[in-house]
Length: 121
Length: 109
Figure (tube, each protein chain N blue to C red):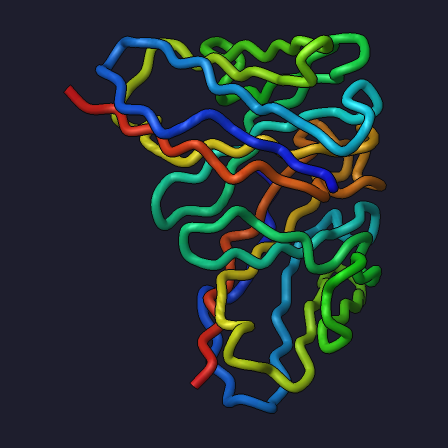
């Protein structure tokens, strides 16, 4: 069965960086995009961007493009999201989700369990 | 910036029908998706491309669309349906390809 398993919770200091992993199984990794979505406590989900796991092409939300880097390791069926310059407002749960195509014709159909990040001094 | 608008909360008794609307100007041009989220869990896709129910989702969940509004309907609500529901779509040019509504907290009385 399809699974997306994310790295565990983290507590980071302001101005630090974090790299969250999303390890997939149960499908052909390179055939799907991985999207990253974050959700602050009590707030709606917020799209951060995506990576095409086949060719590595990335797309970033205008709100995160200067602090976010997406990457992938095809040999490990794993996608990564690195967020730098952390601040308290980045305290949230971060999700990866797969999508078959780069249009609204395809759903975010399977999600990781989420990685809770707390930014605190 | 483009927004999807949902009522923040809704209450229904078990066995009744819940109609959760989501409005947005680009909805006639872009598909909408619905996610159910329970506390401490990841979002779960419960409706795809406006009206398509994913495999494994109970038949009591259905979707409809009319103009700039899409609606998730839960017929015969059960206690386990208590959750936050988010609609998701994109703006008309897909400049912002993934946008979520503010969410509707469904309470089963």
